[in-house]
Image (tube, rainbow, N blue to C red):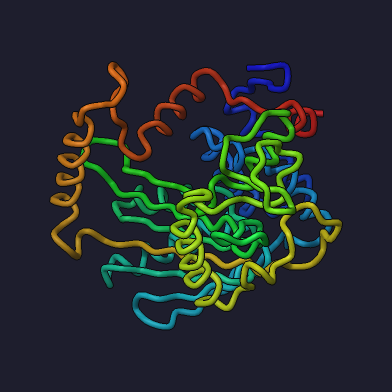
Length: 344
């Protein structure tokens, strides 16, 4: 806690976010889905993609960029593939519905894919991967976004932050869970650091001239995952996600998409693309056997020697589950600007 932050009980924040989106015109089902995804992020410690984004979504709902009452349309092209037109509604609504469809297909086909176009920002990709894991599926969720990440060795933004999330069920335990941007950090974290007046980590962002900076107010673009030395890795992953999310669905490519923020255009549709995959372990070696293997795998991982005495090695998602438990008990930290807007 600092002078720039406020701690709010999770249940109070959840109710207010839902109400705030409904007040902006969102339908009950789409507002509920967005609230669920935003609370996932806030509880897991991903504050850049948490409740603070409700303010942005409400602005775009009122401006017309986000359709408050979308009619999702599904076209199933094979036993394992469905295309969704999200009708420019809140991306979270499309996200949960698309992953649900992918899981439904995976029950019979072993794998299910739902490719989404004409969507909007869907928050933290991990929310949808975990939705699949809750149904004993391996879940993968991807999305493209507007260009604010430089190519490796370039001085201009070309890809979006293009997140990749995956989750897998574990016997007698919480899912293995991985959620990352293919940029050094998400650009929403730059915006969060601006509101907190806090320095960025080193080697994550650059000015308009391509100079690396830690000042969030000077940050014009992000560096790809891997930074100045190994950014070709993040840039390559971002390209793959653009192919699967946008090129495969017919959505707008990163470099052609209007910005999510920092624009006065609150009306033009952005046509964001998503990709959701569910893999059914039951169709491989059986769900119970797979979950037992996952339990054994994580047990082996947890006893690996640590570089820091007394600090255990954590499996992907373990830190987030710990944060969730703490925040459910102690409350969720909001920046002062978000708190004032939501609760004024």
